[in-house]
Amino acid sequence: MKRRLFLKGTLAGGAIAVAASAGLLIPTTVLAAWPKSAFDAKKVDDAINALAGTTSTTSSGKVKINAPEIAEVSAEVRITVDVEMDNVESISIIVENNPSPFTAHFEIPAGTLGYVSTRVKMAKTSNVIALVKSGGKLYSAQKEVKVTVGGCGG
Image (cartoon, rainbow, N blue to C red; front, side, top):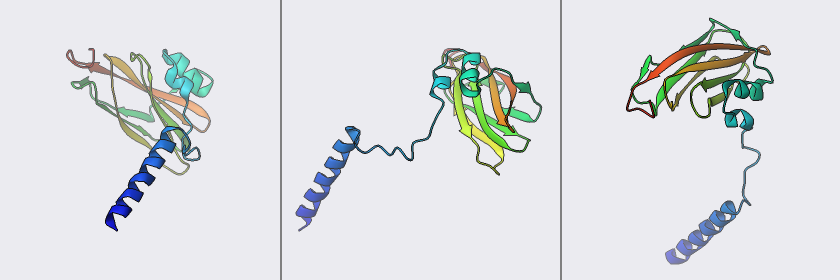
């Protein structure tokens, strides 16, 4: 009895794996929409334009970036963005001197605090830019993070 159950489970699992790898079981309703053209951009202005349709941003003291002054391990640089304003719609993180500068994008649900924390990889010393969409307007803040030699290309 146990052998039959094992064989049935193995065959069922194999069939599901084959169907998934053939693209027959793609969960399209749960896949998030993401700004592909912004992530593919090679320049900061191109990424911002692809995301928001404009490169015009307003520098704001209400957007706070917490990042190390010196990144000793550039493969994992912890970045947090805290936004002290209401109606935050999205928060994006851009690393100016990375080969693909648009690094992270977060859609913020209504009624949620404007706060994100993530780790990014940095190619070399660069400005880290936080781009915040709130109330239909774009706000930004930036902070320089120095990458030490021996890091990810510093």
